Amino acid sequence: MSFDPTPGQAETLAPGLRRVLAPNPSPMTYRGTNTYILGRGAVAVIDPGPDDRAHFKAIFDALAPNERITHILVTHSHVDHSPLARPLSRATGAPVLAHGDSTAGRRADLAQLSGLGGGEGIDPGFAPDHRLADGETIIGADWQITALHTPGHMGNHMCFAWQGALFTGDHVMGWASSMVSPPDGDLAAFMASLDRLRARPEHILYPGHGAPVQDGPARIAALATHRRARRAQILEALARGPATPEALTRAIYTDAPPGLLGAALRNVLAHLVELTDEKLAAPLGEMTVTTPWQRI
Image 1 (cartoon, rainbow, N blue to C red):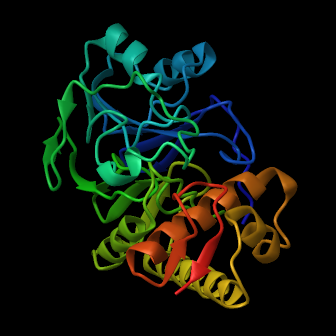
Image 2 (tube, rainbow, N blue to C red; image 1 turned 180 degrees about the vertical axis):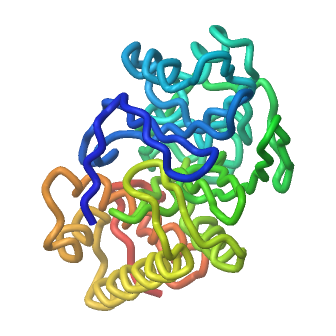
């Protein structure tokens, strides 16, 4: 499916829902970050995006006369999603709502390990004005949205349910799978969040990057199947002998573009952490990104 909207140009996706694409394309962000404007009159902004003056202006240009921003919601605090939240809040007086800061929801045991690396794209200064609880409902003038804590891609990741649709941030996208990078990401949590979303009644997904997903349950099932296949590949490779995350990445991701091999390595590491938790594999020494793992 073609997806090539013009950055900065507001598009109506559904009654009461507009999208403004940020001008930050990359191998990790696809065409850029999707900023959503929810409601009419008194509106919410979901994922303001990077701290970019042109995008800041585009969000205000997308508003009709006499419209105002009353809520700013952030799915998670990566630099392509959250940095514009504070400038937008200062300009409008609207509070920033999210699950927590960039350390919220992280596994404490993994955060204490200095050799795992990680931290890619974290917005370290992010702090919401209001910490959203799982299941909390936010009510606007003509809209209502429910926050769902969906850790995995990042510990503070949330999805938002609205009128039969889900805003899924980076947890579920149609154009690619998500990176899970320990210690900020956790694969077991990612899979549990997929199961939770698949069991919900919403069908349409509005992701942080890429086009809307019309059959959300099918896409969620496909992502879960993909992750289980990668897990099986890693176990099969370890059955032939110990290997480092880098060696496993080279052996498994044979068709990945060079620009995505770094993200692939982080996903392999996430699988190894999960397999270690399940006592199916173990590092030969301290758990680091360069340590060989063996099958148990």
